[in-house]
Amino acid sequence: MTENKTDIKSMNEIELKTMLMEMGQPGFRSGQVYKWLHQGVKSFDEMTNIPAALRQKLVENCYISHAAIEKKLISAYDGTVKYLFSFADGETVESVVMKYHHGYTSCVSTQVGCKMGCDFCATGKSGFRRNLTASEILSQIQTEQQDNGIRISNIVLMGMGEPLDNYENVIRFLELVSSEHGLNIGMRHISLSTCGIVPRIYDLAEKKLQLTLSVSLHAPNDEIRSRTMPVNRKYPIGELLKACRYYAEKTGRRISFEYAMIDGVNDSDECARELAGRIRGMLAHVNLIPVNSVSGSDYRKSRGDRLKSFIQILERSGITATVRRTLGSDINASCGQLRSAAGNKKAKGEMVQ
Ligand code: SAH
Ligand code: SF4
Image (cartoon, rainbow, N blue to C red; front, side):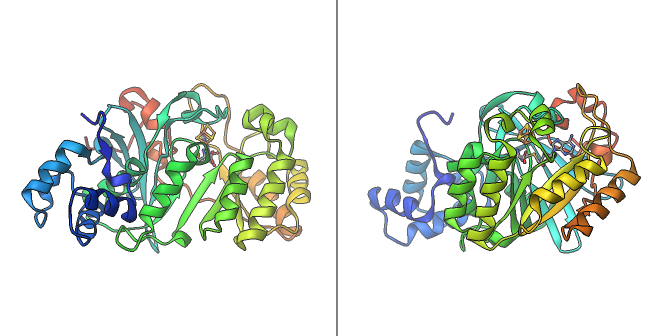
């Protein structure tokens, strides 16, 4: 269906203008088409102010990608909505909408699966299928807005996949979603989470975007980190933290370190002290997350007193730390779990579709 056709929703305004001018269209046409695409139309027929002949030409040459709802779960606790979306080729990804006091946040996927193979992650265990295009990342948010009748105000790139392993498409997505005639979601409302692809962190720093960089650290040293996160064997923690320091200095933005607390693996006082020693003095914040157990791994959440003690040690070293609020815990809201839970038997939330 999409073979040899142009992915029109991944085009920025300049590229769209060039293509439409080459089709003999007046300059103002691209603005109209861009607006329709970013309002989330699924077909060219819906573009009612576009001449029929042009619509026909667009049908022949282009396609509009769309995230179709395959499954949907609503948390009975907090209204978090989790989706399994499918794309034109039948590949599926997960995405979650969460309600906070400041509005709705969408957690989007950037790849179908992931190559990084982190030991505690359901997505990592499912292998890698392909990268998502910019329009496929955007479409997740569009479908969520339409399905819930809401406006998403914040985005976290923390769904399935490693965003910096799909760098070009992710940068393009950021350009589209923050564009004035698109969803116009400012960079300050966007967080990008990475397991630590060091060269791409330097590339991103050069762009000086005002987004929040979240770094999935999850361990204070190479020994523990290489055991749970294979990427650390390629980019050890020292190199990663050097890149983070550079990023913070270059952009003036505070780095958010994600640290999943795993019982008996990385949650000792010694680990807290080691972590504090490594990131002291850096423009940073630590987000502790009690690890979610996933099938196929024995990891369990740390006990509550471990979290308290860990935070205290960090704070005594002048490092701010918080425990991330867990939303949608009844619907396996951590990404990768819905796609891999065959038939969603494990999920207790309301199954809608
Ligand atoms: N690939 C990127 C972004 C997607 S993962 C990354 O790794 O940062 C989003 C976040 O969920 C990461 O911080 C990841 O480490 C974390 N995560 C994955 N599996 C988890 C689990 N079982 N429990 C808690 N956090 C998990
Ligand atoms: Fe990939 Fe992130 Fe999961 Fe690691 S935690 S396997 S990088 S999605």
